[in-house]
Image (cartoon, rainbow, N blue to C red):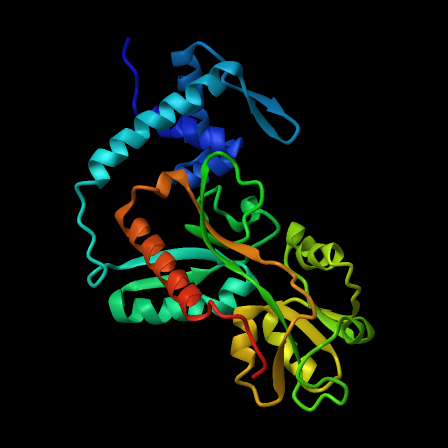
Length: 309
């Protein structure tokens, strides 16, 4: 029996998108062409493969059984073809779309841009919002090459790599009338706080850490980005509890002082995720390696706890 190999990427796109229009956009073909390809797939496999539902298409049992086989076959072909390519970062001309959360955008992205300027000046970056989940970042549809932050409940077609663990510290204004070289639990609970709202399910992170320690916090104002925090703290008697690397950046601001949290609030992971289709691409692998190198350097340089500036 003869098979049209061009239909295999079509099948995987439909499995991942569960939508004809999105699958067509990802493959760069028209919706009628995608519908025609789906008809040919159904004829070849003698199975409907996808059943229309209210919010998309549900794969049949045969489609579910075919997916790992087709994915493995295409991955083997990619290994052979992409493995023959030489990637020279100094000469490369390429645009990468990255979806960092607010923490990564503040701490990691400036370092990455500086490294790219030195080693790969032809590589450009486009940053897109982290969103509430991986679907919103575009990582599952091909809209984002890499996602950076805390990855929750990744689907099977996403690869997740742990980069580092980050701690927490506190920031208050330098001339705070009640706070000296440290913050006690009682002072922390009496103060009002500036809170940074991360997207989606990430909002529970710090609140859970505080809950585990039985530490109360009265939030006076919530902001959407770390850049808003120093201006809020500099003109109030409020406190902000922030990742340690961000606190170290803010310690350079003479208006502020950084202090250890009144109790150990634990750590949170920083992770990198990408679609399996990109795992063997030489340029993608090089960029992932560079990001890992940068986070290792940040961890080595800032392994000591944040102390009073």
